[in-house]
Image (cartoon, rainbow, N blue to C red):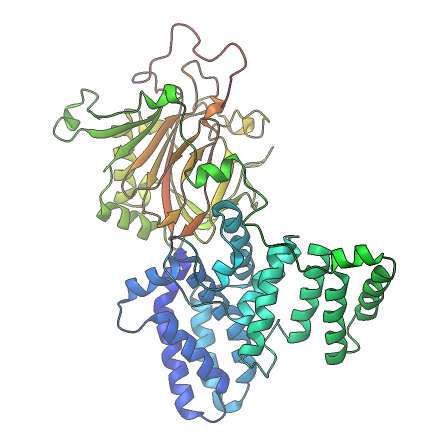
Length: 517
């Protein structure tokens, strides 16, 4: 999402080049006209650059249009413009692409995959996506045939066949509606039909429908690889069925159910679960100053979100101007986030979809100020805390359930505990944006959901006072449905924190197995 925001300005330069090119080569460049038309649609003339960026990146469908446009549509355009008269214009555009982070195929595949994650978590139908009508978000332009094919193909590859079928059927319909006489790159009608028969067969074993589609492919491209094998497979399958069995498998596919995956985590992300009654009665708000003179005039607005374990939401901790500066400093240095694995400092995995950067206090006064503020409002010493970690979550961005402490039950992070620092005792999470839909922080073992609120902080202790990890602090970042989620984390380690968080005279960690919700 950070890359897309910065890309909007460069997009306008591309648009200008293409407009000039269109004026010079009006009769030859139908592809350039189509590309420029899509650029005008994305840029929404009459709005300033920040508004254009917001309109694009804050909604998953708009962002997907944008990414597809700069990958597949650009490839098709480039092939159509291989002409000496257009060489200079292509070189100018390529220079812009070389100097700016444009989306690539990995981004396109990732966003296509994200739609399944969003469907599974927030329970909406594929037709809501390809019609641009996702619940609780503003309407957007519908998918083109190419875009519906990209998402359907990815979902079929991931074995989500019934959902893939919805997208691929729509792609075929829109292919004909759009009257696409020339093949669009990566999505010719034959390829589209091939994936459709694949999804039909694996979603319902409807051999008649799969055979019908395969025979259509045979008319268009008789020499296609595996075509004869597919036709024989479907024909033999039907021949071995009784009339009753044939009638059953030839029925239309079952109505798509919103999701086959609807567990505890998904319900928390949708805000459908509440904390236990024993916890609810202790939830309250108060002003906290820790008897610190600095906080007397502006005490901390503290909300007790949960007790035992104690989880707090601290309101109005950071100003918009401070957040803007922190985001500006981190922009350009964000990299794909890692997850700690045994014996390593981290590796890229699908369980964490975000970009991140660790920023030392020396990098910018805004970072040093944020670190100092975190110590003040948490009543902890920032000298033994990790550098500020900034995270940006985009389309479907999420982080599966995990612990923040290193002494995890599987021992993956033990090698990261340094004797002079200790384990991660507390988490200080700054929400740097409001998120339009989704993106909540949830604690599955205590039924707690915290929604992002710009300038607020979620704060909790990961360890008991005797240093034993509190497994009840297992938490997740829910997928972002609409908007862009920015958070900054400050992790406080155990050593030298005993001045404000006193060690107990007796162990306070449970001596028996913890009973979880």
